[in-house]
Length: 217
Image (cartoon, rainbow, N blue to C red; front, side, top):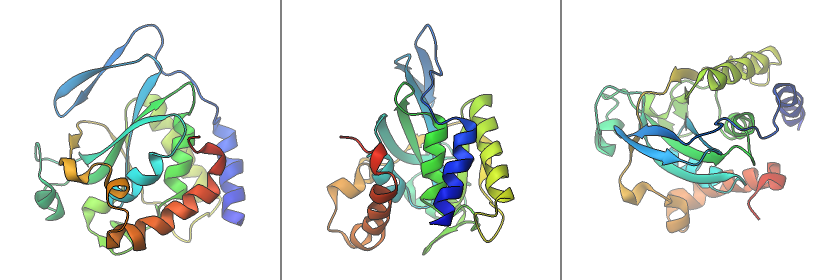
């Protein structure tokens, strides 16, 4: 559990307490070239770290997470289909877009889960999921998110938490394209499906053990 102790010490230095990102008025966030009004306590985080079914399953269970949507970001093709993204030709990554309550959970805490629950030192691969669409990536919404992501990557590399340097891409958020409905809430709706039982379930068990104090009641 040495790596976990290192994680705790590193993330304590960047401040994991919940903070408000938005102040006096509601903001608008583009999604699929549309906008939605958000509560002043809500913010957005967009992560890619392998199959979005896996990431969706454990981020949904975090206290303070309001909504998790699976989709695609970082590519050149507007409104790509799942098949197009899987071809590797669109440049998109499978991502989850998280709406979270900043009065309950911070972006730094989300990053802690993100770096704990996937391998950020393997290029374009998570387990048997191989391709650029499975790359490790943080799409930052503002300079605060960008700074935190880069600082944590630097500290994790200095501490040699992983055998190889972290390859997580830190890129500006441009667009998020929501995947088809059957990709949403996938594990909860299909717990007995093979991928859910043999890939997602073991990750969930790890997540619930490591972050038991952060779970929704």
